[in-house]
Length: 241
Ligand SMILES: NC(=O)c1ccc[n+]([C@@H]2O[C@H](COP(=O)([O-])OP(=O)(O)OC[C@H]3O[C@@H](n4cnc5c(N)ncnc54)[C@H](OP(=O)(O)O)[C@@H]3O)[C@@H](O)[C@H]2O)c1
Image (tube, rainbow, N blue to C red; front, side):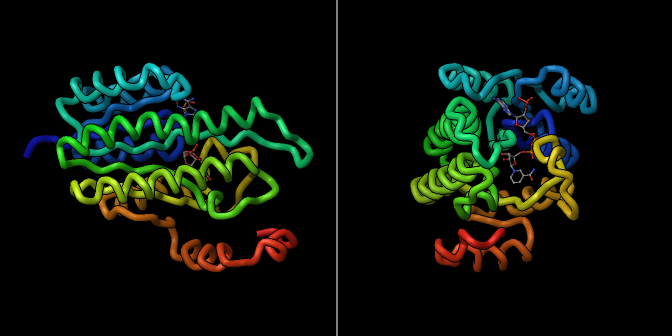
């Protein structure tokens, strides 16, 4: 059987890097997209000839159609696209910084739409392929701590649901992954206790990738967020969940 080909956006660290590693260890060829060339090159050096580093800033949406086409050409096709790029800068309780907020939306949502539209258009034509977006449990409610990060993940989940409904007839799977806390560069300043490792989050993501639909990465979160989503807003405001 010929090698399967994946594109991972946000592959230079954390969950995306572990997903790239585990795909290659399972025999895939991977195009790994991110801004930091040195990190991508270190990853490529681990897997000579199996990982193509692609330096790109997802905020440069105009460049995406050409970069996407080049990746498909270089890989000789495409079977799986995973959008893992994301930012969650610290936000103070009295901070309302539009520049920072737009950066979050550009990276977590607009970049995802621009990359995944390319994937959707290709897979719609070929009737083959899987799309995975890394959302978050944070998108399930509007919390006071990270208003725009929450918003970006809620909107991403809605966009992915719509893609899933569009592409189902073509046999294309669209999967939303909602991790809880994971130990990565994004969360290192939070000193998370009991958080999942990036490697475990990647392992669980790849098990779920082909299933389509929305998935939490643990039964605990599936149960907790079933309830949290249903708490009336005035009560939710007084809780710290
Ligand atoms: N860690 C958690 O607790 C947690 C929980 C739920 C969901 N998530 C989600 O999981 C995904 C991965 O995050 P992570 O925790 O693995 O964090 P991470 O280690 O900080 O990884 C983020 C990745 O996104 C890339 N990225 C950020 N801005 C980019 C840009 N403008 N252009 C291209 N690539 C960009 C980074 O690469 P460069 O900096 O090299 O560009 C990096 O590869 C994110 O969507 C995050 O929201 C994380």
